[in-house]
Image 1 (cartoon, helix red, strand yellow):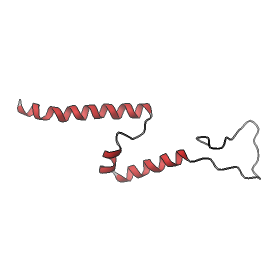
Image 2 (cartoon, rainbow, N blue to C red; image 1 turned 180 degrees about the vertical axis):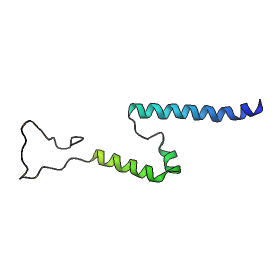
Image 3 (cartoon, rainbow, N blue to C red; image 1 turned 135 degrees about the horizontal axis):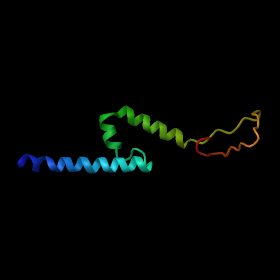
Length: 82
């Protein structure tokens, strides 16, 4: 009985944490809840995640003057994914 009482807060915390992480990933909130833990246990993965986020926020370069214009395609400056 004492063992179950001693382990239950740890299991409860792990369950709540897993739920928070699952909801954050499902909603597309990124790795914010996992950030501190990922930094402790796998700093390389955290640096890769930061690099991906930085690249996603970068603006698209301006087209060169000699680039061909393709009918039906519009390029918006600063649009995500361009």
